[in-house]
Image (cartoon, rainbow, N blue to C red; front, side, top):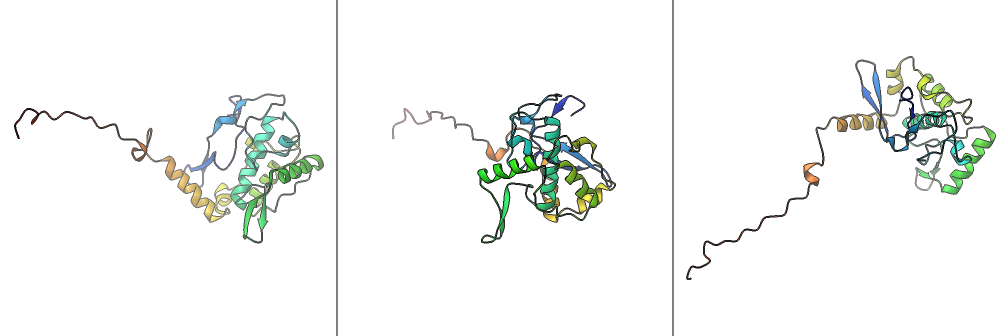
Length: 210
């Protein structure tokens, strides 16, 4: 994609799929290109800002370097794979025993602080893979100039990285893979409205005497 001169602009768990591609190998498939635009050496306005997956600079600048922005979004997506929620924008509720979204004002303040100080404040990354931990930290670097590039990360054994993710997410990815294989073209039959019934006049008894 980058070699073709475009950035994605909308990398989230909903737009990234891992497809098995042989033994111990996976293919990364990207969808949801609504935020895509031509790659530029100059800052550009972000088209889509998915809550929890857009980087700190999106909260302080009207235009940002989209290439570095894609990298942070990919890091946030990998973080979701390990923790079950994005790095920012959620807080644990002791009354409901769950991670719940924080108010938009609180998220804005947090991200402004991260951008200003250059210090990340997300909860610890939950993974046993040192490779995955290292790469996520590089991708979630607050300063775009110090951030790793999304297409430069590498894992020594990607199969171990996938196995280190929570089982629930692996099953979710398997379901997405199965859905992608469904031979549905166009609108599924159960969603198609039936065509209006044609009414024909019955003339067989029209002029007959009762």
